[in-house]
Image (cartoon, rainbow, N blue to C red; front, top):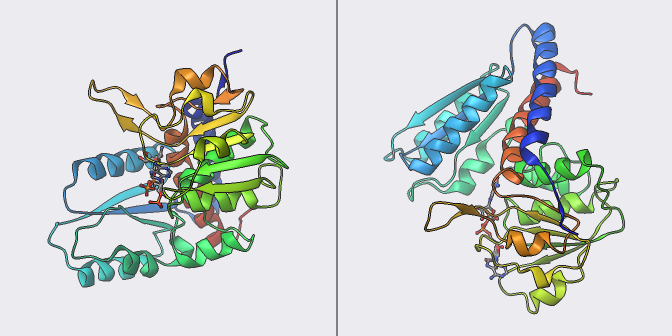
Length: 291
Ligand code: NAP
């Protein structure tokens, strides 16, 4: 039986509606909307599009979204100075520095400089550490979006065998940590694979839940999937003909899995929704009304 689709687009729309209400409540308490500032260095076209989409999504839920644009020649010291000013600005609840940064800037120094209480990307070592010890504050938006998508669909991961393909700091590692948290969408038995892992298809065949985040177009084939497994495809790639695909062969996987995320319309919209959710949560924490 073909798999059901895990609809990230519709789920993200519902989350944005809820966030609009939380923004209104926050506005009443504080007299101002939560603020999200994106810092964009240079003129990478893909980064410019990502930042514009985030700013637009923020404004749609009532968040004060702004973009701080800096030239490609910006030095590390200049960027750190901007981050310091945003850290000190009470109108700013969330800061995101769009990656990648130009070569002269060490991204780790910038990630470390963002105030952990405004780090809505969840990249700061303090927030990663809190996640690792089971006290999450801000978790990375893409894996957080995966968890929220499963949770809202009523899919439990408790006791399930989960395989995460990829170990990046942005997706794979925080994904594994989230699936290890206690709770209905956690409590999984987690295996993480990477480019040096052996016998990946055999490992994937044991997965009740597969999260594919390898960044390799259509690497995961239908015959890797355990019948009835849940498959979440984080990958996003543009084919030569302009169409999009993920890290799994969608048509093959959909024949075997019970649930599968489409690309586009799966994890992507959830990522942006979680950025907004983290920003609202940051405002609520600052106002002392975090539920
Ligand atoms: P990344 O930093 O390139 O990490 C890829 C990971 O996959 C690495 O851990 C790498 O292993 C592993 N890997 C690469 N080739 C492999 C192979 N043949 N077999 C096993 N493991 C392999 O990528 P990322 O930032 O995590 O992103 C992953 C994908 O998700 C990309 O397609 C990206 O565009 C997409 N993405 C989507 C969203 C969204 O909102 N939808 C957000 C973020 C990312 P090593 O560590 O050994 O190198």
